[in-house]
Amino acid sequence: MSTLETRLHDDLTTAIRARDEVTSSTLRMALTAVKNESVSGTEARELSDADVVIVLGREAKKRRESATAYDDARRPELAARERAELVVLDGYLPSQLSDDELLALVTAAVAETGAETPKQMGAVMKVLAPRIAGRADGGRVAAAVRAALGA
Image (cartoon, rainbow, N blue to C red):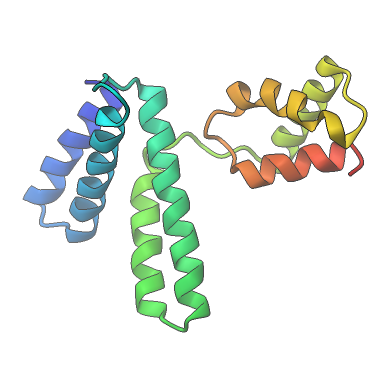
């Protein structure tokens, strides 16, 4: 079991004892997603901390999208619940890159690959992906790369 997964279990126990319903239900959901990821595929595998961060990032993205959908549907109580869950998940994710930090990484990757046209975006994204690893939303990264390549 990864150290992050162990921390999730320990924090779940603490939240249950404190009767913190939002945190405990969010951590249960996160641990279920981690467990599902570990048994998906042809055989079960042990997830690393990086794998757990990817799973938690996906769950956080779902919460952001759900909150927006609930806002659009004029359901503020459900949107508030999704945002509260997002706050819990954000505590386990690496801090997000600022716009300046993202721009610096994109500029370095473009220079490293020698990309000049939007058709070479895939090469830049391939170099960027491991450097960013859960610290920025994929759509935000793609938009920054497009802007750097003049698309």
